[in-house]
Length: 265
Length: 165
Image (cartoon, rainbow over all chains, first blue to last red; front, side, top):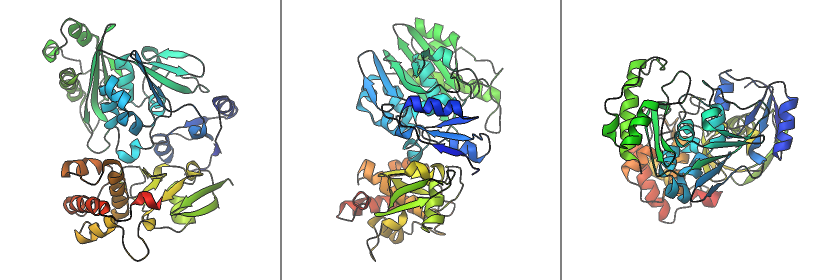
């Protein structure tokens, strides 16, 4: 790999200072996306700020209302957490589908959200549950956090500290994985709570994760797979690549959404 | 050049590395432990799997600096002197390899599976858990058999990798 400066701050304030000082600084969390991106020269930061020694950014807290997960919490911890499994089983299920065991041992929830890969799993959970993303500067609702392909509302020196997921009445996540990369060709997260129904789609949109309002309205009246049977998502603005056409992905959204509703608990 | 202090297979090392050095480069090029392989270099094939503080990771997708202070176990650290680790023995017994390139990663992942899921592993579990390890020779059939048998043998008093760590 090419050369960069490596920094390992002990707290968030120090990390922010280092990021401000750098010309093109990047935060290293689990590195499961950043390091491959750097090898491919898709990212070429002059400074890497490794957060692994910053205390207080890892761990899971659950109450009857919300599950709050520290940014550096690894996928394996979320999938294995008895509290997550009890409060939001769909979220534990989602974490268990990310990458493979070795990737889940390193990859973090904060890294996944900050990267906002259009085929990543966690953005679907954040948008599909109406999560709140807490940074060193502010609290951002998921609806205002994701800004398109690999883009978020985060400023260059802003660091995610934790993510809070409201506990829904029920939720489900179904994913059609690309068999090689295990990223979502299409993944749909649905949730039902007193604030309404949310349907969030990852893997399909050219602009990253998005909600399907028509399905939400139908499911609010009748939370069943049958209620969304007739709803077709237009192929416009869907990703088209060697793995699937835009039409195929649009069709899969309907299939995955119905399965997610049927599996919701 | 920063210094990384790391315990590998029970032995402590302090090595000066360029910040961009990957953990697998530290192991292979600085410590000359070439049992850990680099296959795809894109964290898909799993040939580079080692254990860092007891958890399987892809050492091509971790900076050496991130392992500072950690305890690493590589394939070289599994055998007890001249006697193979039960998982290594099972791969030999069940012909779980042909060219052998993926084998170190397969075995390190297999030991990790046993550490997480215990010694009674059904075929479906083994196949799912080996999702991140790619073999281009065997068709996996004998690898799956070897992992199942190795898991049982590890329970039967074989030296576990946890102990080595």
